[in-house]
Amino acid sequence: MNANTHKSVLVLASTSRYRQELLARLRLPFTVQAPQVDETPMPGETPEALALRLAEAKACAVAASRLDALVIGSDQVCSCDGRILGKPGSHAAAVEQLQFMRGRVAVFHTAVALAGPHGLLAVRNVPTVVRMRELADAEIEAYLRAEQPYDCAGSAKSEGLGIALLASMRSDDPTALVGLPLIAVCDMLRAAGHPLLVA
Image (cartoon, rainbow, N blue to C red; front, top):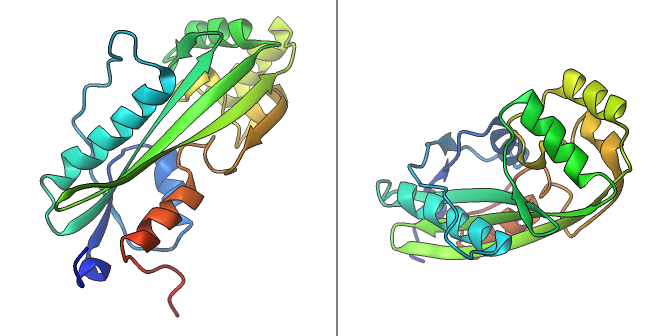
């Protein structure tokens, strides 16, 4: 990294309001740019590999057009018993996902990548292991009507009422499940020379 890295613009390669709210916690100025990336899984690709590949692709896609910037890309993939559970997009799909996951363990792979003018700088996956409660159909319906988490992987919005769906949760970073692992982001920015906690 050159000596001017600290002057770089910070860009979030995501239109997710959840990721924007999380990154705003660091109180660093940043802009948002939507990455144009095909998110279709490759044949035989593991959930972790998919999350890592897409986070890297999003960061690098935006960085290629922003030579003044450090770009953060992130992606989350939920897997349960060998099945990848994406954003449900509808009430019926969310009901089916939560019925499938009840009483089971799901892993949310939240990957983050940092890219600069010369390409990828760092990429990391932060998994969160979640055990779902044995949910009654009425509980699933009540949760979905209240929260409408149809844009959340696995239909589980943990920062809201979705916490009531869980029996347990294990992760190295409490922000990972929400969509952007901020501990990893801070590590990457510091390594890239982008200052945090500057008086």
